[in-house]
Length: 361
Image (cartoon, rainbow, N blue to C red; front, side, top):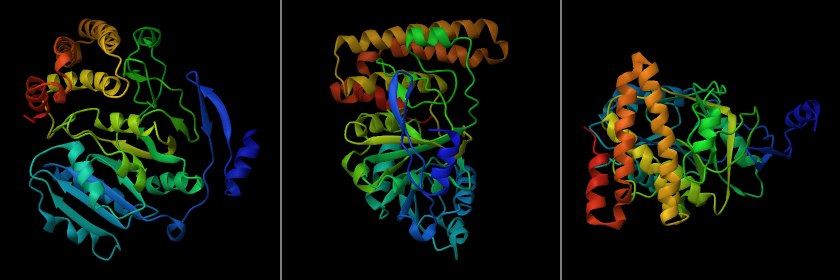
């Protein structure tokens, strides 16, 4: 299919299928239909938050600037949010703001609470420290509307900044099967670490999501987030949930729906704890779903060896970031040693350990 025919299909509002090979997989690219507020499915937007009032207001400002508005915004508050400061923002917008208090912090549990409260056909999950581009909701909704057979259960947009440049370490990241240096995902290595996927300017199918995504209501209700194995502030709950969901439906990625990630330093565990959690996230992804036994440890161990080599390299060469890479090196070492305690349902010790890692300092 030529570029001209792709554009023609887009202008006509049709769906264009184009199988191609990316990262040794067959993926399907398609062009979504036109969409406006009247023809869009009902939308619920869920935002878990904890003591980030400035970041949350910035996020909500971007929601109010959307070309297609949600019917409701659900904030699941695990902190001390003052609702009276937010309700005036939604006056005369036609958007219902609902705030659900949550006693203890926990991202996976908060997302599940938001799912239970949501009434929309499409449920958007976003973090409280992101800013959406004005067409974010619209571009994602287009994919679901175009998918008339309803084979796609989830869609994710493009996280910025993301230059997707090829790193000189690319060969070694492939050798060790570890996440690519850029911020673009969509696939996993057999050890559970992120895999580089070539970026293209049109929507296509992926294996997993990294970060906030949008789901059909029936899909997320059938495949909720695992709040037991991912308690508190634990990394990787979104990737693991999408990996399970991919067994029953398709997942799509659209670079046309952009959002800006502005990570807040508030409400996060210590950097070493975060690195340990990143190690566990890769292991949990495979161990909880594919159950390869000893092979799980060997695959993740090989990836961790590669990560530690890179941390040592940067620790020597990048003087300005030595503290970061030292934390990474320590966290990767602790993560490798304590890998048998990564899944809290396996023992009381593992449960205590993972809950301590997820506790915000």
